Image (tube, rainbow, N blue to C red; front, side, top):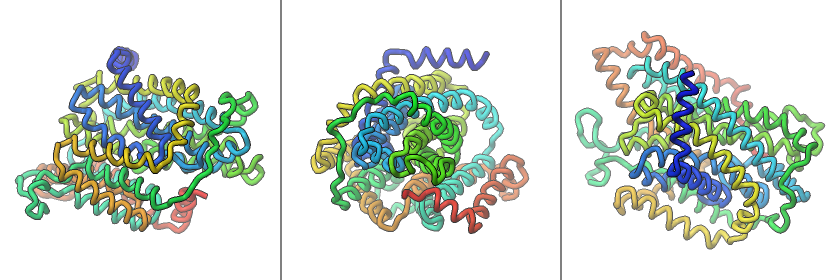
Length: 501
């Protein structure tokens, strides 16, 4: 009964004219960002963080729409141009583009949209069902438990990060170091500011994320300088046949369930879900799949596209209930809320239920809007793909700089963004994933604050982290994950899971 009452509050909030408009703007912008390569959802969320100067519920609904909307739009570019609009659509290129070359572009686009809609609706139900009990558990958390949970989150980010474990560790350490620049939490003493007045308040997360994701993506795309064949002349019917739907249905089901689970994990989300789903479909289909995977198998589109959208939406569960980001995008959303005195966590549901449940219901409405946007407007997105990238990137850079500057009206933030863009390009060359750095940057100050509180409450006794049951379980899980990735079989399986080929 409580759930029905809460959903009624959510519908009343989400169906207001202003929230419907913000939801529509968010999913439309997210789809556009997904379609156009060169500016991913992370950089776009950073640019739109300044909208939180208005109503917080409007802004959160819009930012969420941008995130899961980009998962829809990314498939369009992957299928038609063989270029992922955002990272979670990488595996869609493998079979989606081959289907397009065989004259089945419309079918691939249609099954991607249908799978994403089903997965999004299922994930939204999970958010509504599992958030309240998790919040009840979160009220039992003290500083020691929160510190241990953040340790588990960072360790999970290392385990699930793409590439070398050692490099992921290094990126997290760098993020933690960058996060403690500025005033000390307790004493107010300035740390590591090197006498630069602009660093006394710390590095702005919008500036660092825009550089590492927005500028870096542009530089990497320009450095490739390669032309890609585009199948934009004739898309064909976007409605799959009954036979194709029956063939895709099991993959959609598996992708939805797998993505919903992986989205909750620290370091998970849409990217991991799409890779894992494709690996699962190859295992299920085996060598006798017809057509083979990589040659236009519809399950290679249906599974990953369902998984990435489910993962994108269930990643809101730990962010809303515990205040812990499980990927870089959720870290940005937490940062955007915190700079405006909104602390994600169990207090949000009790102190502002309209914000919480309005967001949950708006996810379902946003998924419905996305189906309406993606299926009939495929022709519009196809025309956008014909715009040369040489004309797009100056506009993208301009909007990035405007977005960074508008947060604090400080040109120093733009300089930081440029420096981070150069560092991001270096990281790309060294195959270091920037997502763990952002997680370390956001969680670092929160970890320090909870560590100090726990030590003060225990009068300096570090055993408090091991004598409290919940804290001990979380730390044991973190240690278990660290030991797990040292096993040769696990390490090999991890490398296979992230292999794009």
